[in-house]
Image (cartoon, rainbow, N blue to C red):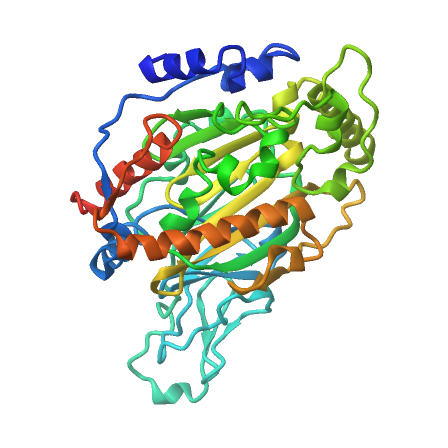
Length: 458
C-alpha cells in the first residue's frame, strides 16, 4: 500500500470499500488486492479533447492498433450471423462461418461500397455487395461476380476480402486492425486471471441502449472513472452508494478498476438509514430482474440479504451456483476498465458492459453503449436485445427497458458532459488538474494514451 492509499484509509477509518466489503466475510484474493502506484501529478491539457490534430492522431495511432470490444458472442452465435462494428471512418464486418468467426474490412473490393450498412446485425447466406452483386463466401473467399469476363485482371483464387484480427474472451468479441498486433490474451493482461471465477459466457444482452453524447469520447468516458462528482451531480445516490471511499486500482498498461459498495451510504451522506432502507433503495442494473425486496433479519446487513437473494435466484432460475462468491462479488460495482474504451462489470447484481466511441469522426461528440446482461434461461430460449438509440436531447428514462433510477443518473451525467465540453473550449488555463487518488485512473489512462500516440501532447 503506497502513501495515498494510507491517506484514504486514514481519511475514512473503517469505511473504505475494503472495510465495508469485509463486514460480511473475507474477501477473495482478487478483491483484496490494492494497487495504485505513484504518478506524475502534472496537469493534463485540454488540447487532447479539443484539437483536431490530436483526434486524427488517435484515429491513426490508437484505434488502428488496439484490441477493441465490438459485440457479444451471442450477436454472432450461428453460422451466417453477422455484426457491423464502426469506429470513426473504419468499419468491420464480423461473420460467423462454419469454421468460426472472421472479421473483414466492410468494403467491397470492386468500388468500395459498404458490404453491410453501419449498425446492421443479422443473418446472411453469403456476403454480397448491394451495388454490383460481387459475392464472397462466409469465410471471405471469392464466390463470383456478374460479367466476370469483364475482369480478366482479377485472380478469382485470391480475390478474398481483407481480414481484420478477431478474437473472443468471456463472451465478448474483439477486433484489431493491426495484423502485427500481439494476441488478445496478452493485451488483456491481468483480466483473464481476475475474471477466472466471473464467467460471463452464459449471459446475454438483455438491454442495449446507445446514446449520442455532447463531448469527446474521453470526456464522456472519464465521468465513469471517478465518483468525486457523485455528491454534487447525483446527490440522491450518496444515501445508498459509496463514492469518495471507493477503491481505485491501476494494474497494468491496459487495465484498471474501481470498487464501489452498493447498499452502503457514502461518507458524504448525512442520511440516517436503516438496513431495510438501504436494501429497499439499493441500485441494481435492472430492478425487474431482482424483484421484490425481502425483510432484513436481525443482525444481518442489507448487503448480505441482497447477495443471498441473488444467490438463491441464480440457482433456482438459471442453475448458476454462486455459493462460493462473496457478498461484494454478488452485488457491488466491480468496474474494470480495459483501454481504450470499455468497462466491464461482472457482479450479478450489476452486470454491465459500457462502451465509449467517437460519434462518427466528430471529435466533439461521442456515443455511449450500455449492455445490461442477464443469465441465459435453462431452456436456451432468449432473444438478444436490439439496440435502442436515443439522441442527445432524449432522456434515458424514455427507454422502457432501463431501470428508472439508473436512467435518471445517466441523464445527469449527460448534462454535465455538455458543460464540461463548453468549458474546455472557454478555458483560460487550458488544462485540468486531477486528484491524486480518486481521479488517478484517468491520469493513468492518459499516460497509456500518450504511449500509443508516441508523444506528450497538451
